Structures are given as C-alpha cells and as structure tokens.
Length: 232
Image (cartoon, rainbow, N blue to C red; front, side, top):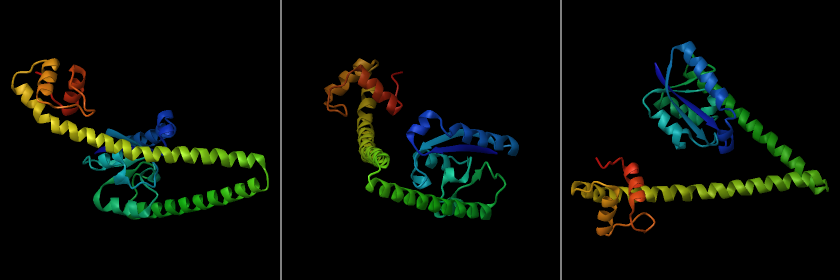
C-alpha cells in the first residue's frame, strides 16, 4: 500500500535543527517495513498542534494526496479529539507506533492525548504563578526569567502578526502573475524567442512588474518559471 509520511514540529527552530524529525522519520519507516507500506512522499509542518490539521499547508496536501497518511505518533496529527474524529470520517491515516489500531482505539488515544494536554497546561499555569509570586517577593532570578519570557512572547507575537501579512503579499503576487500570463503567452505567440524580447513586449504593452517597475530578462525569467512557461 502506498502511503505518505507526515511529520510535525512545533517551531521553525526545531525544523531547522532537525530536532524530533529524525525520530519521527525512524518510527514511520520502521512501521512501513513491518507493515509493507511504500512511503511515496514526505510532508513536514513547523506549526503548533493546536492548529487544525487541514489548516496546516503540508498536512492538508498530505491528506488530499489520495494515499493513506502515516504519522509517527497520534499527537503529531492532533491532540484534539474533535480533529481526529473529523479526519476519521474523510481520510485514511495510520499511526506508526500503533499500526494496527482501529478507529475506536485511535479515538480513545486521542481522548487521552487531549487530557494530557489539559494537564500540561494546568502544570504550566501553576508553575508560572509560583514564579510570579517569587518575583513579586523580590527574587531576582525569578524576575529575570519573567523578563526573558516576556521578551520571547513579544517576539513570537510580532512574528505571528507578520505571517498573515507575508501570506497576503504572496497571494497578491500570485494574482498579479496570473493576470500577466495571457500577455506573456501573446508575446510568445507573436514570436518573442528571448527573455529580452518578452520583456520588451510586456513593456510595450504597458504591463508592470508586481513592484510597479519595468520588465527585464531577470524578472521575466522568474515570472515564466512561476507560471510554468518556456521560450521553446
């Protein structure tokens, strides 16, 4: 059976360092050998597990690939019972650490994972409360920890705010490229055979780049690659 592997880490830093990825990959490939699965593709997200699976770019692609999805552990897919139950109705997925588990067992494990997450959050909340009390009593080490945590949270909030803006900008660029497509195709149809000729043609038509500038061979090359067009 052909399957696709899905791996998830919680942060971009973990993704770059490979922390956790190799272990997940090992679980998946070991289960694949034992169960006779053929891993045809691998998808990786660096995102919190609280984000619904279908709202994660790589997870959505993996689920819609037409092949069963395999994760190392169920929490890599989600710790939310509702998420897991919803996926069960629409997609086929396997868990490497329990490859023969049926729907009831997976639902049960999801419930336990969700409960564990609730316990973890409660412990973190209690620990932060105790840290704040020590800081309020004048403990300088606790005050430093709170300051570092506040700085990290502020940085994370800034990055979270920037992400939607970057996504919106990328969508605008994609829309602009598609609007330019018929003009490029017309230039090619009319005999433009070099990047410079295509640039001249677009400039003659009054078309602008996404930044509002004139076209040149470099910008034309990037555009044609993005649109899947070629000179020949």
